Image (tube, rainbow, N blue to C red; front, side):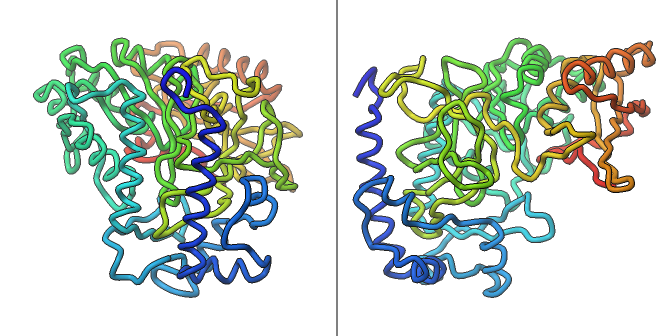
Length: 431
């Protein structure tokens, strides 16, 4: 232990012990992985984490979707009889094919513990009053975050079923000190406050915990949110329905996410070859859920693009932790990149440029295919106070040219015409 945090040797030892316990459970009763294991003659135990990575195959979302289609409604990735499961949730991002995910009380408790660690890293305590600006639908993060808030003793204020204006008034009435939502919705809350002439300074907000989109680790988005919420700390984290809460922002370095180890065994691999990449090299995050035995995932290719922070062996992070740190947070998605006139373009890069312009309230990107060539056009909605949209467009086009070496057509939309989002924003439209 150093600075109260376990070092890499301790983390690896705990990961290996948890992994071998998980493999025993899977071999005993999980039909999905039993079938995968037959093909590779997978052992019941492994001698090391490196041995595990070398001998066990990846798991992909495509496999999981196909398994649930072949064995509706829950698939075969269940380690126990169905009556052991008490929670069901579904993914939000699998277009047309949401994955249904079941949890036992033990697996649920493991994830709530991980979410509580997110709050603790954010400095949220039992003295805080957390407002949850969620609809509390079938998506897992809403429920986990709320129960984690209860676990650490905070006052938990549900915002489901309320309009945006009503949520703002509830935050004032309850004197909320923390807010949980997506980065996009935090922007929208502030926008509606201005429209309704609700003074957000009446809310003693210290911390905004954001997730669901990469914006929390994009400097321009963070800066805008901080200004709109009068200096509140914008705290990023990320997770997925399939794996639960995965990371939290480094308390000492904005834009760096720590993986919650030893709850997860994390790898970063080359997108094409699947071979591990060196720290400082961009790759795909691969996760093994060491404590979610009821519906486990082994070497799951998340589709998240990340880059490990470069540190010397056994050198702690600036915050004192030895856990894997992801520089820049989630850099993008494997399937999000498009190539426009030879330039690789990620949605995070576009957002980083657009959010540098406070005159832009909202935006949308239209992607078209013309004679086998991909083109994109940007629609922007200026704030009502913007009086010179022509100059704004010129400055924005210059920013795209300087950052991406691309000339991007820009169209100005009327105030209030572009959609607003409570959940993950869908700003990219493929035509």
